[in-house]
Image (cartoon, rainbow, N blue to C red; front, side):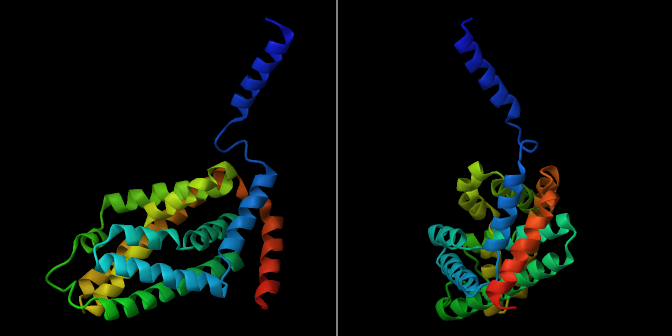
Length: 246
């Protein structure tokens, strides 16, 4: 075999050997992942505006039984990042980040529930009632093994796409799969028609999704040793503090 061709072959083999899912994540990748998670989960006003917009779209889509509008609502929701930040805080054993991220998740849940309730009261007009649920609502009040599996798989995909930059383009697809906003919107619709069984079941689906994403993200963050980027985390949190004027 010619020397030049042999070099090319060795290079290809070397690249294949290095192409591991977790072990070839570099320090630069870890720092970038931490930066992306903190920046995209920062509790800015624009963040909560997008949560409200997402919830409004999802509520309208569920009431009209329109899956396209629901998907639109899920795509604009910046909800995954704060959940990944909780997992990051647990992995880093950083109580401040855990508290900050749980607070952000709690706030966006309240914002989403409030916006959904307003639109449910304005738009329902008898389309959804206690006796008759449409197809999309029926999907959101069904909690089972599939709900848990979807949450785990989506959480795995979301955390992996944050760590590996070449997978970032698939993040919007993961956001659709995980379906965090529709259960909240369904919960609000349940309140609006005074059906608390709907509220309970839909909100349980949301909580299961939340826990599943955190658990799956913890596994990924542990495998890529994201805790090695603690120094970067401290810098990002300091920058966020300055930005928010805290």
